[in-house]
Length: 94
Image (cartoon, rainbow, N blue to C red; front, top):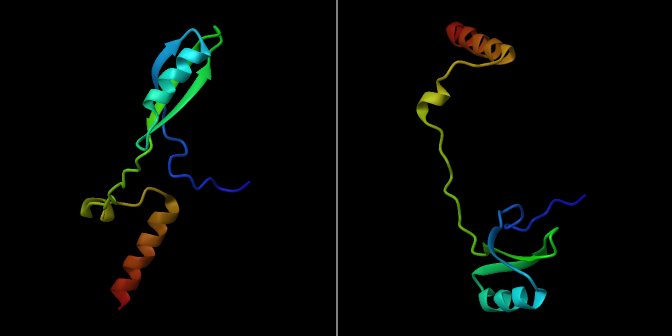
């Protein structure tokens, strides 16, 4: 299956309002829709209609940099400790 490339894929929707008829929900949806807001209508098990919204503006996340402390931390796995020990021995020989 192809990977979804939509940047909004997986972003949470928020409940805006609940209506008894689809026409009432559609009226609210038409009022809310715009360039900065995605709106959809979902029918509930009680035959009511829920209007859901989410921001369609993509906020660019800042890249997280690892602090220096984490780079110098001890390895957690046996393989990591073995590699660390081999690296120290190699540096001693040089």
